[in-house]
Length: 432
Image 1 (cartoon, rainbow, N blue to C red):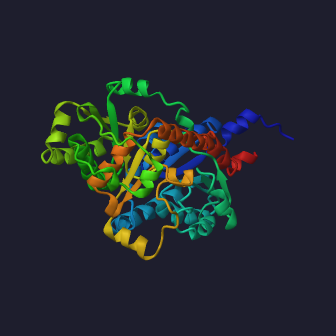
Image 2 (image 1 turned 180 degrees about the horizontal axis):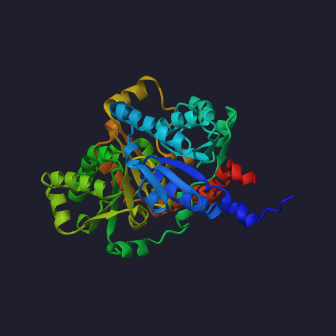
Image 3 (image 1 turned 45 degrees about the horizontal axis):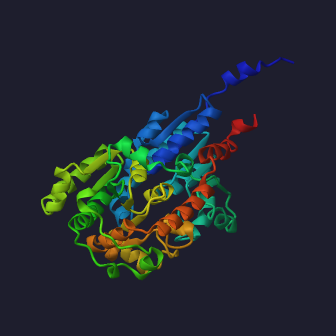
C-alpha cells in the first residue's frame, strides 16, 4: 500500500473556488471581511464574482462591479429589470463554467435568490449572507429561502426563529459593524482626525449611498440644514407627539455660527453627485452659501464611522447608516422617500408588517430614532425634529446611550469569523 505524503496530497488538490455577489457598499464591506476570514482557513482559495472596491482589495476577481446591482425600490427595479436580467443570465453562465465549491450571495435578495436556486439545483452549495427583512415585510420569503440557500447567515437575533418556523437552516452570526465599532466612541479623537473644531456643534448628513437616493434626499436634507442655519424651524409642537414624549428636550436652537455640517460619502461618484446638488442648493440659500464660504461644510469619503462619532446629531437615509449611528451612540433622524409607485404598492397591499421602518427602532422594540417617511420627509419637519435631537437633555442622552449600548453588545459576536465557520462547514474539503 502506497504511503501518501499529506503535504504533497494537499498541494495536489485544486484550490477552493468561492463565488460571491455583493450589491452595494455595505455588502462590499461585508464581503471583504468575509474573504479575509475565509482566506485564513483556506489560504489558496480563489474568489470571484460581483464585487466592489473593498472586495477587490481583499483579492476577489470582479467579473462585474457591485454598483451594477445598486437599485432600491419596486419601481426602480422595474425600470432596471431588463439590464438586471441580462446581467444575471450572463453571470449564471460564467458561474456554471467556473464551478465554484460554494456560492455566497451577500444581501441583494431580489437578484441573488433566483441565482442561488439555479446553482443549488445544479449541485453547487449556496449560502445567503444577510437575511432579507422578513421581520418587517413578506415573511413568506423565509419559506422560499430554503429552496435557494442551503444556509442563511443572519445578522440579527430575531431572524433565525422566523426561518425555523419554515424549516430553513439559518444561523445568527452577529453584525460585523458591531464588531468594528468601539463600545466607547471617542468624539474628541474623531473630530481631531477630521479637522473639526472640538467645541463646535456638528450635524452629520448621510443622504444615501446610491446616486438615486442622493438625487431624492440631498435637496431635502440640505434644505433642513438651511432652516437650522437660519433659525427658521417649526416650533416644538410641529414635531410628532411620539417624538415629544420620547425625547424631552430644552428646545434650545443650535448656535448657527458655530454649526458645522459633515457629509460622509461612499465614494468619488457619490461625492460628485452630492456636490452637484449642493451647487444648486447654494444658489437658493444664502445660509448654505455662507456655510460653504466659511468652510463649515465638510465632505469626506469612506469614513462614515468617524464622521458619525464626531457628530452631535445625524440626519440619514434609512439603511445600514442607521445602525452605524446607533453604534456611534449619536441621536439621529431617519428620513426617506421612495418612488411614488413603490410607496403606492407598499400601502395598497400592506407589505410592511413592522411598526417601524428602521433597524434601530426594530432592535430597540420602540422608537429610538424618529422616522420621517414620504410625505413627512420635508425640510421643515426634519429641521424641527433635528433641533430636538441637537438639544436633548443630559438625562435623555444618558437613556439613549444605555439603549444603544445594550443593542451593540447583543450584536458583537465576531461575525465574519462565525460566518466563515458556517460557510466552511459546507465545503467538501471540510471533511477531508
